[in-house]
Image (tube, rainbow, N blue to C red):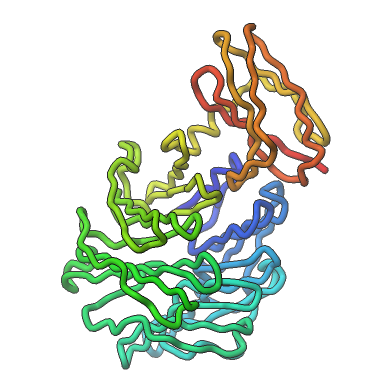
Length: 382
């Protein structure tokens, strides 16, 4: 799947298929793509660095970082003698600039979905081909030592799809049980929950949905509200911490008719969905929005300088007398300043906006005037 980072309004990923990404903070974003290319920004998308692991690997995938620059990823090597890929966990302590393999690996045949849960806790899911067990591998000392806790024996071909944690003890995990080897994308969805950091997992859902496709990814906005997507246009959600899950087709609009592949919560009230077309959609209180189309509707009448430093004059032309709001968000969708309520009886409105309190970076000015939402890029220089 080729990706374009639409929220920076035009910085392209000109490399191969994206294999992993992490958004630890509005300023720090890191994306890895095949075979061993890493793109990173430390200033909210103003500038990008092209990096590599220098581990002579065939692929680095499924990376995860914290905001302090510590991160993990899966490194793939192709073994010509075995004709198979081998897997190792790698780490970086300097925002992805340099990488090294963990001296002590979890010790199984296959690793997936490594995560940095806290400053010291690192996790992944491991698979043992001999016992057929999926294990939750957890380290409390940044990967120096590991403990392994059984999740499920894959006697019915169960496979991990995704897991997430809201803190260092409470998390959820999705599995998929296919009907047959011949139909690996048709089967039942399973969701488990842990309240002890992954030592034990309790089944909360075992159900065939319509359509009966894998539950691909899962994210929680807080301890109660979460959403899980499938390989089709199916969304299920929970409002009680994953105890019960509800399928509701009202979450899907006609435009999202391709396979939903990724989901992220920048704030508890908003989430983003991407599909195999490379489109990214935002869902909030106004419903679904195609991010690329929304950012394309930039008001060309703006006269404030970019980059701006402390304050600027925002101008907008109105079709009729109306009330509207001016909001400023960072690139992850988080409100950067309090919203400004406006009213104008004339056809032109101007507002002086003080941005001196904002750190430097890229922001978006969102208005709902003229019965439509428009986005204007704002660069805070210093």
